[in-house]
Length: 110
Image 1 (tube, helix red, strand yellow):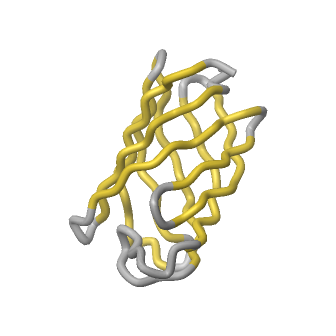
Image 2: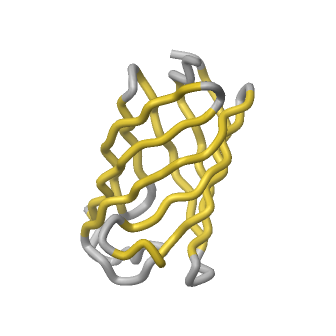
């Protein structure tokens, strides 16, 4: 399943902090960001499911992540893809108890 395109992403963490951003998914690569962090990673899709890894890096020193005051972290993610929507879960690679729920909506084809 090809999910290449421009996506809006909303997320909520286990700390009950919320955020949103945009991501471009292209040829198994993820690039995106929000008001304080940029994202870079890779994903795979198979049978309506996706999985991947994303590095999240702060570029705005005044911003907090949905996990609090963290400058950089890596997320593992998995979920399902249906038409123009992604729903899934991500967790910090070095702290699996810190999770976020992800909902994505595809806005543009590439």
